[in-house]
Length: 320
Ligand code: APR
Image (cartoon, protein in one colour):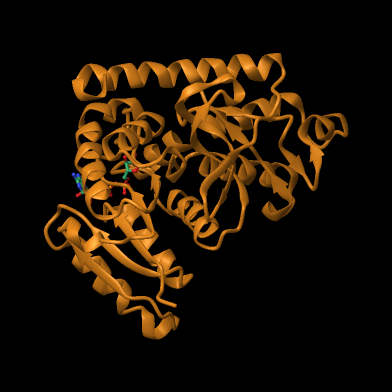
């Protein structure tokens, strides 16, 4: 059987890391696409030349021609502009909306059967716009944010408890912005919910509150340190986890920005919710029950996403 084809739209920091991870994990042949002259070709060749040492079988190529993504099984979209210190994800909206239009049209023309994972920020609005511009089915277009936000939360918790990250299940809902909702009740260490761990004296409520806030600010913390761009190792790893779930029909339960049609009280927009990802794309949304506080936080986050979508419609009348 031929290897799957993975198209990476955007060959910057995240795109290059995605390509390297896809190669090392032998998920398929990789096509890097970018408008920057030479960048996708250079990164593809560099990664291909790591093949003999690493020992992977995967073809790497770079292009600025959408025709070369033809028939891709997976498209991961990072095209656009990343944050600099002092910028919020929302500040990227105007520029990246235009990019989503060209990317959506390129995917629709050349890879209409692909499973599409959007990473470009502001995520929840960009994945919505990308779906609108591409016209692909909603279950085949989703956004990567929840896996990353949950990984950040899990990392901080594992440090606080001094336990392996493998035994921490953390869970973040809502939009990928300041209003995201790290769920304390549904996050566990080896199945023990965080509120129980507070009662057991493993941590204090104050420390837990600080970890929740650090999770919300996780992207900005890295932007502040790097100064020239935003995070890329963990974002790329998170998206690869989603792509692998699709390609291998793993039926993974992963939080991602998915199109809701009534689930969790959300209708007609993309927001971070728990999903099942398998060969059917986003096969299911796990319609969990939230308590009053969680629902209030989630609703606040949904309203922030709605505001961004309205702003998109204001910029591009074809979306209205
Ligand atoms: N088509 C294709 N590629 C484009 C386009 C376009 N219309 N416009 C810009 N690009 C490319 C740039 O040439 C650049 O190589 O997108 C790439 C973006 O790479 P980086 O600037 O390194 O950004 P990165 O860190 O990879 O983040 C990409 O993901 O997490 C989000 O906020 C982040 O929106 C940003 C995106």
